[in-house]
Length: 115
Length: 502
Image 1 (spheres, each protein chain N blue to C red):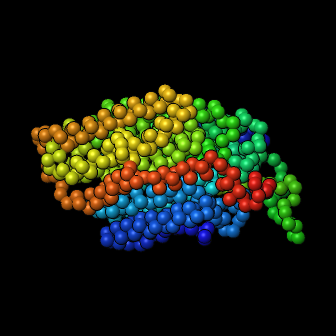
Image 2: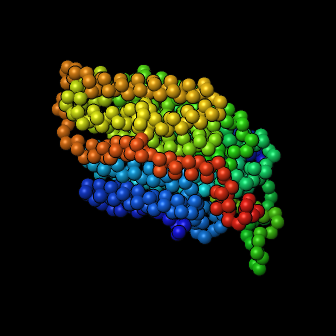
Image 3: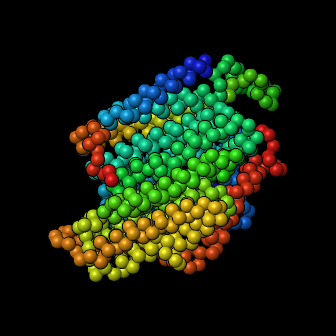
């Protein structure tokens, strides 16, 4: 299971790098989205992808039983997904506005503020 | 001492932001919220510094969950100093913005965004949890994205797109590194991480993740070779926004590097030290050379941010108490001076309509007070005694000499000279030279509101230079705490030396 996750993460990162290196600003945004998904999956796999019981403390017990799943990475990844969603929404709005104002989606032509 | 003081520098700007959102159309209310928010945050930070001075560490276990299970908010010497200086910059910029930022931007939630930025920055300084640090980074970034693109002028959008892309990349690397570290250690609490990594035999894992953190934080700090986004974007928004970015944002990256490499990546990381020394030297040199080739005030100053980051990294790389004290003092000095230089650049642009040195001149005749005002932070940046920059550089260079790094000390001195060259270039072109024809149309008047915060910061620079001993003592104390993470660990995890296993 971990191997499969690793392969998926690898493919996602490869796609992200490829898209980030494109000249069209929309493809760059796609690259950012892919990269954030790859990272989310990395965090999700951090607890180890294995069969486990739900992390619920049984009645009367004080601690989790052995073999319970680690719930923390799921909480982390949920937070990261929400943050990533907001950021992508903003980036898409920025991209649209940039395209409207500058009339071009080629990052190579965005050189007026360069030094 | 009430440990909940640590939450005040977060809650006050948040409350001010919410209050500001209530009536976006009333300019007076907006400005009032911004300035009052800045002033109250500064007060809260001062109380926090006093508390840290008494107790050494102030720790809040959020929600009553004990560390390392819950999130902790920790104030030590470095955090408290950074929060105090940054809050003062926010107050100065809030006053300055009344005149510098146009009414449309102010109606478009400029002040609430400034307050949210403050909350994000303070949160990053105060948190003791790695994932929480990521969340504060995002709060800060989101506010900075909108502040940078607010107004939607063409150069702003170009700069903002590059800034957003590179920062999202850095965030992704940071989050991935945090995930990997959690996978290996099972904790995100920084004090707990320090304890576990000290015992960990897995050097490969520690080195890999520490390099990921170095890249992620280095991107945000503007470290060589990851700084190209900075001079491409920092000169595009209104000067007030440039000033607060220049003062605060890259310094959060430097702070995160200092925290990570003193608290939990501090064991047997000699390779990282060597790498950091090289990066520090290269950051200094490339930044200052980039500045020398520029001919517009804010572009010159942007490149100097990069070069100054090198000095701070230099203290971190040397990792002695004297060097770290130098870094902390340099951070304070740099935040004050760099914010002030951007504020003054804004006044010049307001009066002349442009910051292009080829098209302006004659300011010494027209506004001698402005010339004097520029000279203080400019000479301080160049390291002229007895201004604050001299003492900051002196501490760092002495530390590198006593560590045997003569070439690094030589580089730092040479970079200081080149910094002075850039400052004299601005001085000669903008102030001494006669105004070239044709003169820019209709110079703006009424820049007194903008000058007031700049004067206060210039006086602070003088104070740090002439009477800086108490501040330097605080910096030394912060450095002592950084070099002895055991104090931090026992303050956070409670119980005896080493803390108890969870």
